[in-house]
Image (cartoon, rainbow, N blue to C red; front, side):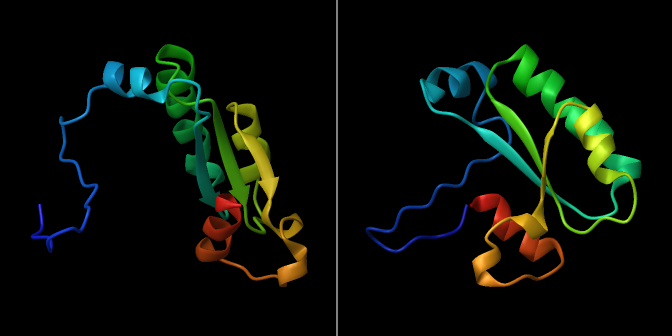
Amino acid sequence: MQNRAQGDTMRTFGPGELDAPSLVAAKQDQRISVCLPARNEAATVGAIVEAIRTDLVDHLGLVDEVLVVDDHSSDATASVAAAAGARVIDASRVLRQYGHGHGKGEAMWTSLY
């Protein structure tokens, strides 16, 4: 852990410091989404979504949804992610009033919205 100035708050945790049952208990009535920015990730996105959905949504109940923000993929990223259980959002259809961009940063920014 890094040094911190007096009064600063650092929210950094090491591996094993937080266990799943404690996280589920702390969640209470909050809704938690896992947002994955993606572009041309058809080869890998399905397994990632399925692992998150199986372990964190279905088994633990810690996560409520897996959201894939698809940024102009030219492959089957969106359909593979949806088939694995994700809600897929087309990045180009989010926050249009701010213009449009491409890339991981754009997908991450729109997933926060």
